[in-house]
Image (cartoon, rainbow, N blue to C red; front, top):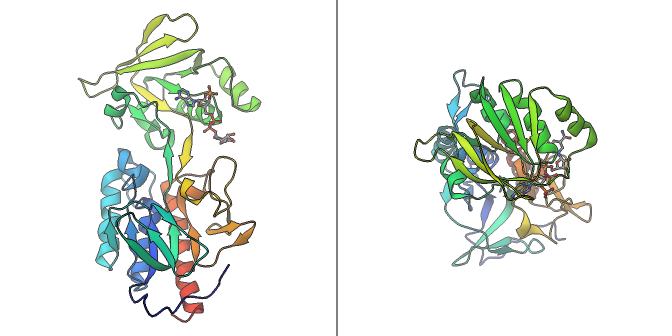
Amino acid sequence: MPDTISTNPTAAEVRDTVILGSGCSGLTAAIYAARSNLKPLVLEGHEPGGQLSITTLVENFPGWPEGIQGPELIENMKKQATRFGAELRMAHLSSIDLTKRPFALNLGKETIHTRTLIIASGASARWLNLPSEQALIGHGVSSCATCDGFFASGKEIAVIGGGDSAMEEALFLTRFAKKVTLINRSENFRASRIMLERAIAHPQIEFLHNTVVEEVLGVEEKDVRGLKLKNAKTGQQTELPVSFMFLGIGHTPNASAFKGMLDLDDDGYILTQGNVFPTINGQPIPGVFACGDIQDRRYRQAITAAGSGCMAALEVEKYLEEHGR
Ligand code: NDP
C-alpha cells in the first residue's frame, strides 16, 4: 500500500480531501476540514443529510435546550460547512481504487482525485417499504426510539422486529408508552436470551408472533392510528390501534462499495482502529478515514457521529501535514 502522496503534475486538480456522505459525521468533518482551509468536497450520496434528515425533533443534541428539527440541524451544519469553504455536491460514488494515490473517485460522468478520503456514508435503517409506512415517517413511524420515544408518552405503540434492536427499543419505550406490542414476523427470535427474557417479563410489553404488517393506517390524517396485520400462518387479518410504529429490524451500513478493499465485520460495518482508521487485513490504509454510523454499530447517535467526524478531519489535517502539504 503506497504511503506517499503523488505529485503527478497532471493532477493539478487533486483535492486535499473528499468526504463521502452529508449526514452528521460527514458535515462535522466538513466543518473542521473547511476551517483548516482544506476546501473539502462533500458528496451527498443517496441519502442527503443522512438519518437526521428523516427525523423530527432532536432533543438530545447538546446546545438545543428546546430541541431542534433534524432537517434544520442538518441544514445548519451545511451552512456552517459552506461558510468556511466546503463544497457540497449531489453525486454517487460508482467505484474507487484505494491502492493508487491520489485516490480516483469514479462518479460515473466524472472522476475526482483526492489525497485523502473520509468515508461517512452512514447506515440506513431498514424499513418494511410499505407505501403507507414511507408516507408516515416522522408522523408516527420512526426507526429511532432514542430520538422519538418521548413523543410516544402515554400512548399505545408497536415495535417491529425480533432481534436485539427490537427488544432494546421495546424495553426503552416502556418508559414512555402505556403499552408496547412487539410484532415479530415469525416465532423465532434473533434476540439474545437475556434481552428476550427481559422483554417477555415486562408487564407493559405484549408479543404478537407470526405477524406481518400489511399497512400503516392514518395516511389521510397524516398521523398513525393503527396497523393492519396479517397472521403469517393462518392468513387472518386484524387491526391493531396504535399511535406509533417503531422499526427495530436492523440497519444496513452503506459500505458495500468498499467490500474487499476494507475490513468489514459480518454485518458489513467498516472495522476501524482508533475510531477512524479503517484497515485492510488488519493494517491501516494511509489517507483513508471512516467516521459515523458506517463504523459504529454500538452508539449510533448524532452526537457520537459528529464526534468521530471531527476526529476524522483532524486526522486528515495531521496526515496532510506529515506528507508535506
Ligand atoms: P437482527 O438482524 O439481529 O434482527 C433483525 C430482526 O428484524 C429479525 O427478527 C428479523 O426477522 C426482523 N426483520 C428483518 N427484516 C424484516 C422485515 N422486512 N419485516 C419484519 N421483520 C424483519 O438486527 P438487530 O438490529 O436486532 O441486531 C443487529 C446486531 O446488533 C445483532 O448482533 C445484535 O445482537 C446487536 N445489537 C445488540 C444490542 C445490545 O446488545 N444491547 C442492541 C441492538 C443490537 P427474521 O429473523 O425473520 O429475519
